[in-house]
Length: 458
Image (cartoon, rainbow, N blue to C red; front, side, top):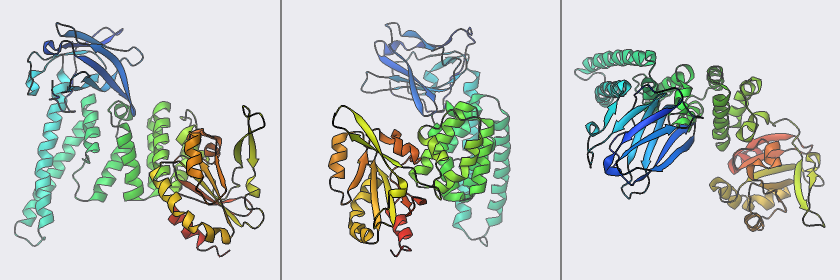
């Protein structure tokens, strides 16, 4: 069966006993097909059922008790067919039924839903939204194509203003609607770049989306929508690329912290930190750190969350622990390389590089840096490289061609002790450290390093 329902088709239904949340299915022409039922928990797609459709095509999907009552999107996928197929469905916290009695469904009406009042809610909202947006986009095209002095330009301006008011009224009604269908409508819209206001510029859209996410978005609905990471990453990009106001970013972040629980906020903060670290935007992490560190809604500071605890600029750099094999090769021991001794002897500064073999930006850095090495070394710069590799042969192969001698790896990946101590989440990450061992700068690429070092005459 080909997938004929778009993501926006929602399924709701029958009130069932509180002890079980079930979905009654009838698909007689798919007997013998295997299937998966997948639900969403943040970025995770959780496969909760794997089974085979019986001969009569009638079967029941039971939501596991650890997830019930589940409210959110799900995917029912056929797994042993070259054609694939299945349904994207919305589960409303209770059971429902769906059947398809035709062999080759080609339209929505081929699927029969029972006890499904909210299905119409979502479809009606979507169609009404699209009608307004299609008119508005056509008028915006006219307004952008002609000068204000053009004939009838004011007529189009007035029509656009009228549509803007109509869309505002529509969105006000959506916001008041308690149904999950209404909550997920704007999540799906945001994933496609659709705002909750009519806008004509990128900045206007960015401000609208940022405002909606901080003030009106239901994060519980987002968590089960399948768009968790997409929306959170987009929100981070909106603030760092378009709006670029750290104070507003921190204020909005605080609003989200207040309206989410421990599980959701920890996940949000972790994904924001990861996104920022990947782009080398540690100044934004530092802006959010006070909110995270003061919050009572943090499960742990493992992984990306450690970045909020490690604003090292101006502080003494952590010592580097070097894993060594003793005389008894079965025994591992750690030797500490003291940060105050990094730039001993003729060295005046130290560049500590955290990298991972195979990482695109890391490889670019490690291919370019050797060309500058002799000149940097002559000016008194020591380079220490720390790898996130987990395979010994990969590490040895990559590090063997470095012109600098200090290259270390504990084969623990980014969960290794040095990565944790330096609050390093993304790679590459580079720390410029002065003679005494204090961190001067944290950077994400070679250009930043050279920019810093051009003031350093040796």
